[in-house]
Length: 120
Image 1 (cartoon, rainbow, N blue to C red):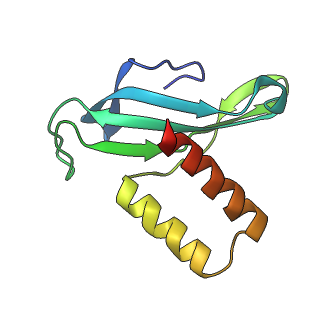
Image 2 (cartoon, rainbow, N blue to C red):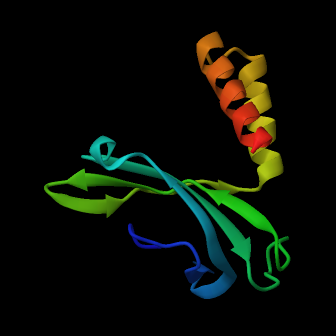
């Protein structure tokens, strides 16, 4: 995916030179433009468009965390961004919460935001 990937774009992940997984971008979350002067992290929601040799089937969803950094005035893709399913992401978040990785204020804000979105 290039830095300006768009919802609806279809692309292919390659593994060892072979098409390993075809997917469509279903959503992208980015920081506001003024926050992206030298670092541009994103969360990208991907959905399989075909059955893959991985344990993914058509319609399965994955979360990908690509990022770009600005070096010498040029944007460069970050190395090895993680990509995993919602279940794995939720398990990581739950364990991080259990181990007190986040402040009480952060968790309260996240909880309040989640409730507002659920009420829509």
